[in-house]
Image (cartoon, rainbow, N blue to C red; front, side):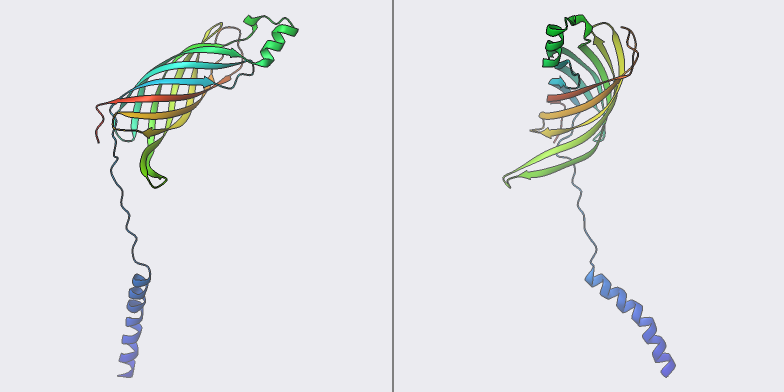
Length: 209
């Protein structure tokens, strides 16, 4: 009898311990909500800046169209931008003091491109506990054809951005990309980088809530 009692106690101990742990550490419950806004066809009107070049800062206007296949993937089918070059103080000094010709400086005049978009993050946050803002974070991989002063050159771009939804039809997005430009034409021999920072007003057609 004593042996049987001891055996029952040993069997009951793990069960009691497991029940105690369940009471102390109840299972967590997570709730994942559907997106409040889904996109299908997006037209973007944008302004942007090319900030990297030491001799000029490019300001540009851009228009683009994006097709959204799902909540996670989209294709920015086409984007086209026209740029204006604002001279920096360094360039003005070189032209004034050393008689460097304006044609010695290569500038981006306009460019075209296309991108694949992956949208892994979507969420909402409160502003001063008075309103709720919906947003998504995305990554881009694409190609761009730049028209420089002396030649056309292709580039591969990688970047990302964030979108803030205002309604089912309107959103703001900020894109930041780095373009690795291949040295083709115009006497260029080195890879160069063209960074773009684009702020867009997105008009969403076919979007649902």
